Image (tube, rainbow, N blue to C red; front, top):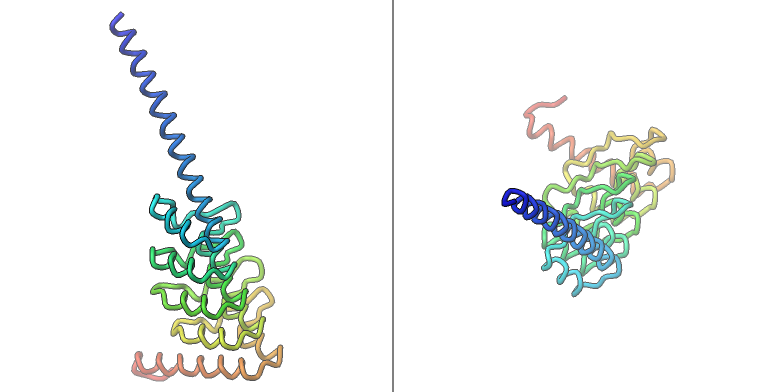
Length: 204
């Protein structure tokens, strides 16, 4: 009888524990989705509260959007700053391989681009998986000259990358007759080459 009672207690404890874990998991998911939605609408106070409640700052929804991507896409700059202060991962990609930086470029949001480019470790050469575009290529396509300038400040921009049409960022600029943007890219390439020669100690 004692064994039977003990077994029942163990089973009951197990069931209760599993139920509590499941409930906690659901609550956590709710917090995460609430954070994504709050970031999208620019609800700064709610974002701060949810972060205090331990909502996952890098949570993703069914489209792969994070709070940072949503804030960037919707141009919610104060929320963007708050998320960056809390260490949001700037290199997470959505389902189409697009990062927050890509979306900032796509929306023509120079302030967001500038803020993101200041984050150590940001990857400027990530190619999204629909057209193979990098943030720089997208900026050139959209003729966002000031954003192109900001992106070109990164010393690790890869000018050799090609999109699905086998065009580099410079190719796109030349084809669109954007002479000023093409000139900016050429100058950045030359500057990068000089730096490489300087550090290698020899010319190619």
